[in-house]
Length: 219
Length: 272
View 1: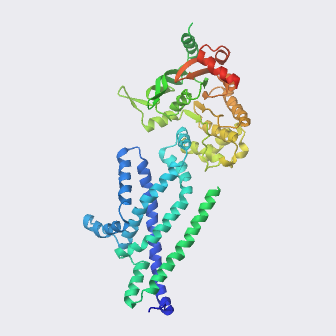
View 2: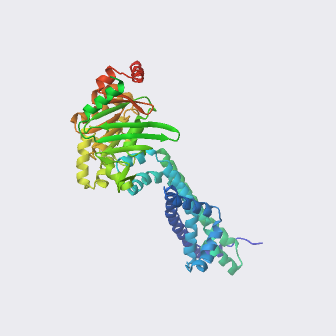
View 3: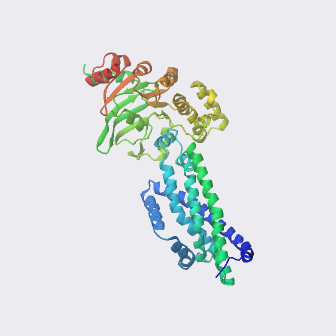
């Protein structure tokens, strides 16, 4: 029977902590990309120029209808062969997460933008603001604060999906645990610690998001 | 003299000058519903025109088309001698692009029923945002203009307040200052007191009357406040079913309405 070995657990902890940094970095890089891609897709979808709006819609539907894992494989293994663009495992992972979650965030942006009363657009027209000014100073500053909690939830969901990056050789927490396990033939401690570390980060984050939500609702 | 001859005569008298706003055969349909039916209307510089009529008669659509919030289905609108929705390219009329719209739109300002202040900006920012970013004024100049306007509407002490902290009447007065600060040639007021509690209507109407009394600004006022229309307007236009049924000076429309529908409409108001 395998029993928990504290000594071993403490020994592998530093390596796993180091890997946690990769996981967190991939999460934030991916999320940063998702925020930008999501906004672009949301704006593209609303474009009055029909081909652009159809294209955005197509991209959103396509990416949402295929698994993240396949997208990661495609970006890391197939894209270099098809285009000659070769990304590091980390870059490919962040891009995959960013694209995938960007399509979800585009819907979140859309909900935020749709919630702005028509009168705000009309006032902006009556005051003769340019389209850019209307978006950046009138619409988005009102549309984004209410959707921050939802975005926070996507951030946490994305964080928990980062182990998928181990499949394209990113040495994040799961990959590190697997390496340790195969080296020492002990899997219980590394995997348990990885799980605990995920919990340690995502639980406080979700509490934070809930608080934020409450505060926004009070306003 | 028939009703139409009468109104035509009145119109000719009032428009010896070049009109600042000219609607020509303007119509507007939403799907199958025609809300404006080939309306011709000239407004002289400095004229105050009250537009009255039952709800759904098209009076709001009439001013919204002038603010470029609604595109006419037919006809042309001219502002200060320039086509609003069209451009002349090689002698042919083509739909105006955004740049053209922006240039002509500068001459028009509007106050809305629902105020439509920007909730994320304080009063001063609400009023200075357009002068700074549209007219290109420096912040100091814009703030000076804004203070002047906010003093005029009696809100000089609310510069830092956010719209949510203001009463409806105060919000609407900020909205008036926000439109005035752009110094438009034509101001549109679209049922600006309809969303207000009765006790707040007076303060907003007083401000508008003061602006009207200054004389030089052209105004189109869509309103349900008949006493206000009588007091402020040079001309009252009664619209029903998307058509101008009757128009004339307030004393004529309110004192001696000729068209049976005008009479019916006004009698409903007296009973209220």
